[in-house]
Length: 116
Length: 115
Image 1 (cartoon, helix red, strand yellow):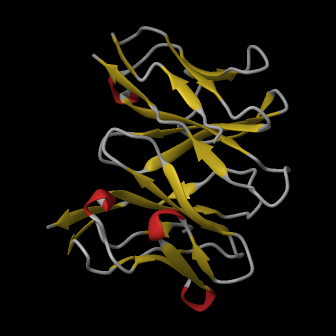
Image 2 (image 1 turned 90 degrees about the vertical axis):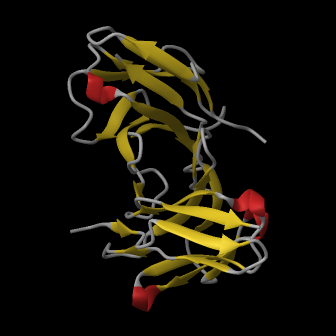
């Protein structure tokens, strides 16, 4: 079964450093997302991306964050200058919206970011 | 305010017992509804989903959920729990019911299964 893959699975970074989290969405999906889950809290939406641009973003997704689809397969989340409170599990997801009766968001296994 | 509520933070059941996890939402239109499961250190796996039609939906691993419009609920059930079902369960809502938009998650219910 096709799946969303994410790298790295775990990254430790120093406060103020830039981090790039990478994702390969399911190949024929057109909508891509990043969510995050701070330890012990609910999963929160960050941003959605369609047709090479951001379609929606939450209040969490401030100027420190950016997303990019640098090629035909990867989808990245960049945190420009990490803060302690950015420590979380970051989930990439993609949706089969428009492919029929699916309309389901599929999640990757997550990238655990620890900022020290 | 629009929200997804999972009133039970933690539930403990005996293996073989039945299970019901509650989920209520407060969105105006009929949203798309989902249940995801997260095992420790793992990602979010889709258990089942409701878009329209039959209000009782079947999912993987023997789970089912029933959409009740009058109660704005989408409770997850399983007739006989297995030890491997121990995990965190999240109800999620796509409030605009398009599949293209972001999901709103409940706070999750942690399931413990005792022998």
